Image 1 (tube, rainbow, N blue to C red):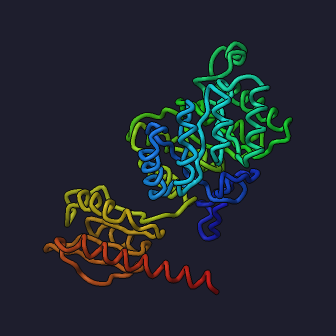
Image 2 (spheres, rainbow, N blue to C red; image 1 turned 30 degrees about the vertical axis):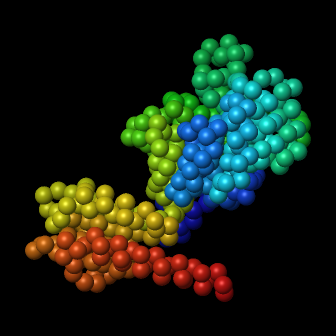
Image 3 (cartoon, one colour; image 1 turned 180 degrees about the vertical axis):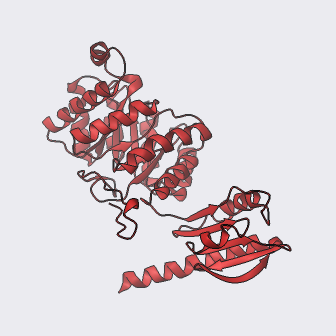
Length: 375
């Protein structure tokens, strides 16, 4: 729960779920909501896949999933796992033997698709491999690949069919005394996904993996994911998440964190508060923010920065941020530190100066955190 006694309208009461481990990352319970992405390289190309995993991890990914459709992929997985700085989930669809091979290769989790993985006997073999090698399992229900008998029963993909599929496979895992699992019920339709996840949240205490599948490109997919996942997270549903975009996996991680940051559920890096700009702006706000976003990507310390074009809202926004800059006149603006007006700075030197001030503040916050941890 995010608890704010001063501003109770900010509070989010998270659903109570069991906690499992995906490698060394806790998922569920009171653990932070973890951010995932998926590689889009050829998994058998170890160097390319590891490089993409490392870039995603640097961007903040807690867990990375890789597709293992064939034996060459599962052979490569062992080295990928060894080189990865974060837990690796093996994505299994049609062939249960790939799941067994992935478990043997050291995958932290096996994602199985109930609509494609096969009968209960095959699932039992996957469970045995997961037990033997310390893997967790994600039951990954997808509206586009539901079991034939459920499509015949319901006539089309729908929330009831998705949840029934998921609960059927939960029963299989539990019947085999396996409880280290999480579950997702994804669809490309925001309404269907949201309804399925709400129904699922009431039906099980398993950790829930959130996602709007096949959401689209960077712009459209971000909007769909923000609406669907944002509302579920606001309701307290969700323990781990992936934003699925037709874009670089790093962009998925960035969008995931921004969704969580906007709800106060995770804090990482610089949160830039900026105005949309208008004729009142004392400097080029849009270009400045674009530049600062790139220049400040290396900052991991949670902190806030306000970039406001004029004095209408600038001083008020700066009161709430660690560092701020408000446009003024005659080619300069006011720098704010810890909510207070500090000094003027010319527009042409402003970007370099703000970067310096943010880095200085980040170092101060890191030192204070280290001291608190040592006491």
